[in-house]
Length: 211
Image 1: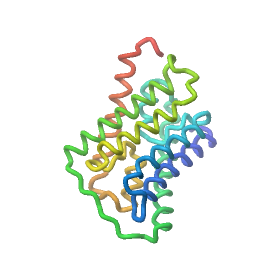
Image 2: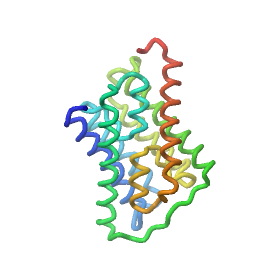
Image 3: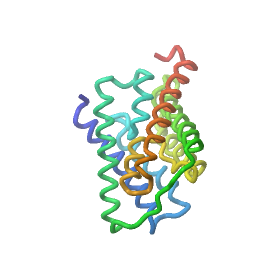
Image 4: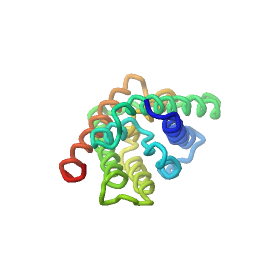
């Protein structure tokens, strides 16, 4: 089990990511600027917690970093629990702050949503592995910006198709908020985790010497 400081960092970072999503997406929200706020929230939380836990805030990222060899197997489940609890707690806070509003449930086209979530989770994990774990970018002080902007780009690109989760903890959060149906959560879990694994194996294939 990872140290409590790592778990708390993962909880806090995921909480503020999901909280920002709910507060900016559910009316009255931020409209077309919501992805900018979401990407910024992820960026600053990465800068805040990267030196403690690696600042994954995403079970898919944790899986990718584990496959890449930069996360202990004993840390994976603990990180996942902290991340999902962070997302669930954020959903409860958002619903309270918004007064338990009626929201429109997104019903995505399954095939398109699977492709969208796979592609941009792949992109997110690929960027994370290259800017935050590769030898060639060791000591990079701005990796949080690259990761936050990847989520920003994904949200603007395919948010209308899949909801733009790219993160199983986010999927849990938006489902608890009523933005997505429980019947659709498998789309995110499958596409996000497969996308993460694909990114990790792609990184290893491109960087075979970076062990």
